[in-house]
Image (cartoon, rainbow, N blue to C red; front, side, top):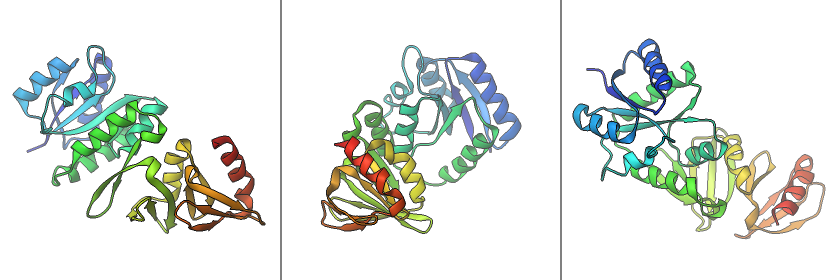
Length: 251
């Protein structure tokens, strides 16, 4: 039996477009209904018990979070659908929550549904991800949280508590204030793109550091920095000026 899907979006054209794309590209999913608002969606979910809800974030009369708050334990998987919004996208990425960006891309939709097939077989702590997302949508930089998924655990860290990130081939090691080192299956480039707008700086091919945790800088060809945990890290010669400018602007 194919997993049942509900599409929730206040725009009729958007609902039809997603339904058509799912029918054409993702025949393993069965769209059983659509809803234009939170009230309709809640009624449809009670009646149809979908396995997945494609949920628009911003809608008149209540956003996607208002629907999810109606459940003590959310009985379906969620893929958020959103128009481009830099702030919202960063919040979603920090929270490690699946999303589709409008206008929809067939390639990204196929990837999301393939990943969904794997998730339906595994019990995940979506409540932690959702709580982090809500916080990230409304809090300032220093209070944001990041979800880190490893092979065996899910970690929720305050971004401000991360001291540095270190490349380990196609993995990244995250070091926090307590000295914990968390190995995540993402490249340092991905963390650089995610965290640099939040006060982090790539100082070396292998090192991304939190500028809040820089204690001192020792001059040299590239120089060395000393972090709040007393670690000393090299600054590459070609990143020296970028690092010093970033540090000045951050202070």
